[in-house]
Image (cartoon, one colour):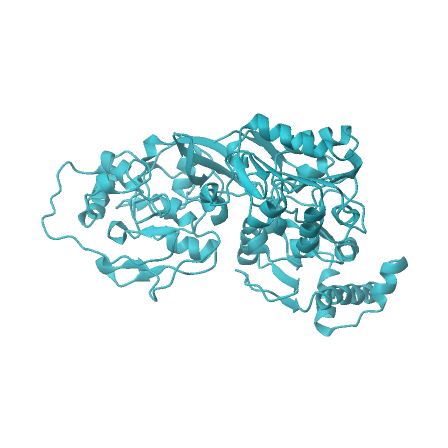
Length: 599
C-alpha cells in the first residue's frame, strides 16, 4: 500500500494514520519516543535487521513490511521475552479483559512457555490512595515515567536498577501527588498500575459506558462514565484534541466517588419541630409550595450554583421570572459587581495556548482552577519556550518555570499589575482616559516590570493574559479586568478569562445573572430563599448568606448534597441528580455547547 505522510513522521504514525495495525507497548502518541519495548519491530527493505516502527522515520521510497516472516518472528520473540518474568495471574488481575499485554499475547505469544527458571519478583510501593501497584507485572515500558516527566512535570517515578533488575518506583518512598496522576492508570498497558478505589469492583466486560462532561471546571473535559447496575464505578478520559486531548484531571476521574458521600440527599426531607424527616415527593412539594406562597415573589431570592445544566438554568429562570421574581443570581462567589455582567472574555481556543510566546497569569492558581489549562501552559513553556509571568496574592506551585513572579497582598498584587500598566503607558506614550488612567498614573515604576512591559510591546511577541478565579472573586475584579483589557489592547495580546465552576457560561446565557446581584439580594434580606445546587461555602460572604437565610421565613434547598450549615437554615430539601446522573448540556469556557446523557 503506497502512501504520502508528513515529513519527519515515524513508521508507526504513518501506519496508524492509514489503518495499519502494528503492536506496541511503550509508544503513545502524546509522549516522547522511548523505543524500549521493541514490540513494534517491522521489516524494512534493504535493512539487515528489523527496526522499531516508533523510532524509524519514514523516508522517500521506503518499503516497510509489517506482516513479513521477519517482522512477525521479531514480534513473537519480544513477546516471549516480556512474558518470561510476567506472572500468569490474569484471572485475579484487575486489568484482565482490557490488558494490552493480554490481547497481544493471544496473537504473538506461544501456547506453552519454554522458560522453566524462577521469575523475578518486584516489591510494591504505596504511592498514594488513588493508584494501586503490582510491580511484578511491570514490563518497563516507561509510559508512566514519561508522563510524570513530560506532562505533569513532577518526575515522581523513575527506573531504578539495571538490565533485567530495572524496576519502576519513586526511589524515596513518596506518594504521587500530581493533579493528573490518575492518567498513568490508563497509560499502563498491563496491571502494574490500577485504579485503587475501583480495585476488584467489576470486570471490564461487565461495565456499560456513557459519555459525560467534566463537572468540576469550565474546560469541559470529555470523559466516559463506566457503570454497573446503574452505579458509576469509574471515570476514564474521552479523547478530544481541542480540549483535554487524552487526559483528565484527578478530580474528574475520582470525583464520582463523592456520589455516596455522607451528606448526599437521596429522598425528600422536611423539617418538623427542628428535626429532619424523610417523606414522599408529593408531601415535600406541597410543603415547599406553601412555604414559598407565604411571601410575595418580589420578596423571594433564587440563588444557584454554577454546576447545573443549561436546561435547569433555563427552566429555573423562566419559572421564577414569570412569577415576578427579580432576585435571581448564580454569581455566588463574586463580590465586585461594578461592571456590567457578561460572558467571560475568551479570545483564543485552548489548542492555541501552546503557540503563545508570553503568558501572564493574573490572579490564578491555574493547576487548581483548570488543570488542563495548566497542562497546556506547561506544554507551551516546554516546547515553545514560552515565558510565563505571574501576579498573585501568594506563592503557588506551578509545573513550569516563571519568567517574572509578582507576589503581594490582596491589594499589593493588583497595584503590581497597575505598575505594569504604568510602565507600558510610559513606554508607549499612551494612557487610558478617565479614572483608570488616573489610577495607573498614580502607580510606581518597577525595573523588572519595565522590562516585562518592553517585551509586551514587541510586535512579534504574541501575548496571552489569563484571568483566574482569584481575580474573579477579588473585591477589585472590575479594575483587574479593565487593566488586563487595556494591557491586551496595547500589547498585541489576547485574553482568556476563566469561568467559575463547570457551567457559569450556561448560567449567563440563560440570563441567571440579568437581575439583582447576590450582594444586593442578601443585603435586602428576602423573606424566602430557593437555593439550587449550592452550599454555604459557595458564597463570597458565607457569614452574611447564613445570617440572611436564618432570618428568612422559608428556605427551600434543591440540591444533591446538604451540609450541616444548609440543614440548619433549610425548611425542606428536594434531592436532584448530579450532572453525571442526568441528561443535559454544558457551555464550556469557549461557549461550546456539549450535551451528555445520564450514566
